[in-house]
Length: 64
Image (cartoon, rainbow, N blue to C red; front, top):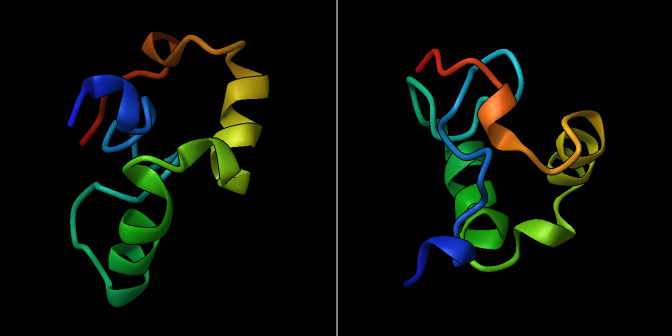
């Protein structure tokens, strides 16, 4: 799987998107399977973060 298929916000910072950070709950597993790999452009959190950070995930401070 190429890195373009993985959500660029995955595992970056618990304060922005907690999926992939720390404890992984059953809900997180479901989100990872559904969106983080391959379909992240359909994820509401991805759309919010993409709009907020203008498509530049490097602007989020890494804190996981």
